[in-house]
Length: 302
Ligand code: TXA
Ligand code: MG
Image 1 (cartoon, protein in one colour):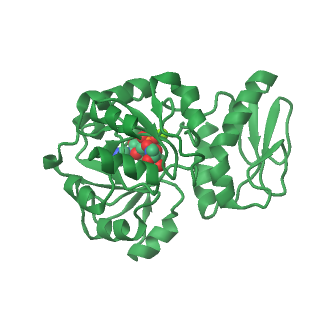
Image 2 (tube, protein in one colour):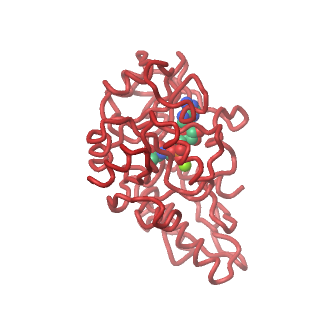
């Protein structure tokens, strides 16, 4: 941890665990540090980065918290949800992190190592997922190593608890809009704020992370497969056990979410080695966390 703190404080980059996926972090007020993140990930400059803080008080210094934001922050933070709020010029968060937008994505991660890093550096930490842009997100320290090798110092926190990126909700206006599906479902948010939530469609993209094609393995991916075709390697779910790996033999969506990225990585590597062209994934029910799982799968299958 001491090394990680000193790297962040001197404008470097550290990968760290969160409860969702591993992040590639830098001091959010240091423009050159943050530009290194874009370079390392090959991330387009117009894709803003989520800023991680350790308290709601810190978050309020960076963004305008209206009533909706206050409710969601108090009920769901620390936790796997990012709130997009209006940005406060006075906070000094770099322009490149915001991609020049008037809003900012903020979250308090529910992971002790992440929180310690933020608290002990005294910095807000800008961190996208620690993968090369467009590849599958990392849920273990070794995934980060595979992508960046010794270029990046990694804090190892074991396997991510949830294994899917945070839910993103835009509460910068009076009408809340879901920008990315995640572990926290639109229904549960809707209940908390006693309001309907609009789901942003792909045709009104305001950030590249919401683009149709995203999170792809190197080989193709086919969803809702009930059997394997020639050239396919299978990933089962529940009773539809079409491969060596199964997202959850019990048909448990929480377990499936925590396995999806690491299993896709394994199958992607095996497919390359063994000459398969497609990963075929068994149907996952489109309810609750299954919404997020299917959203990721559909982006990977474009
Ligand atoms: O779970 C997570 O959110 C992980 C961990 C590390 O916290 N981070 C993550 O970051 O998934 P990234 O960069 O892979 O995805 C961030 C998404 C992108 O789709 C980006 O476009 C969107 O958040 N985003 C960030 N700021 C935004 C803003 N002001 N308005 C709209 N979308 C924003
Ligand atoms: Mg990402």
